[in-house]
Amino acid sequence: MLIRIPDVLNPAETAQAAQLLQAGEWVDGRATAGHQSSRVKDNVQPPEDSPAARQLGETVLGALGRNPLFLSAALPARIFPPLFDRYSGGQSFGTHVDNAIRQVGGTPHRVRTNLSAPPSSATRRNTTAANSRRAGRQSPRSARPAATALAWGRAAAPRRREPRQ
Image 1 (cartoon, rainbow, N blue to C red):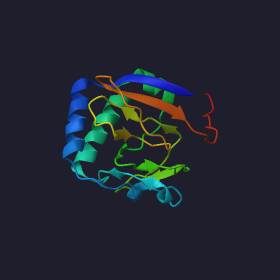
Image 2 (tube, helix red, strand yellow; image 1 turned 180 degrees about the vertical axis):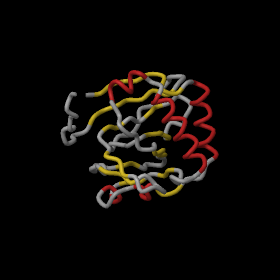
Image 3 (cartoon, rainbow, N blue to C red; image 1 turned 90 degrees about the horizontal axis):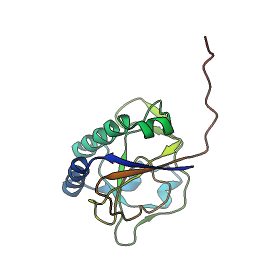
Image 4 (cartoon, rainbow, N blue to C red; image 1 turned 135 degrees about the horizontal axis):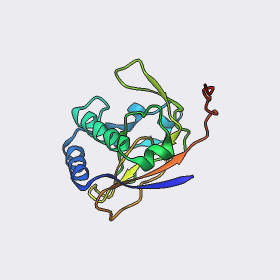
């Protein structure tokens, strides 16, 4: 199922995100790739522990936490801090299987990733995409003034339900 979630970031947050990403440091995207996906991942991203990535990640997580459509569609127990990827000059992220369990950098926490939600934004350069997890897709070019997320589910083990009391 694919759900369009409009206006996750407002225009001011989107502009700030573009400034942070444009001014920030970029490293080989394979730093966050698993064994299989590192063979086909060809992009760059800010280091996970960079101030720009942390600040922008907090902005995105805060916006998702305030978005009723995202919350009702995703029903997140936890959200993995977003990763921000940039593609240029023919770079791509080929066919791969995403890591089902991700280690949150700098912490002992591991998060199962069952949902992708890559925002698209009019203020980014045509080849820059911010995302929580990529699923091997180039992000669409957009003319929207605020960031919009597209969320889709991935196969996952059934959730364990708590008994009613």
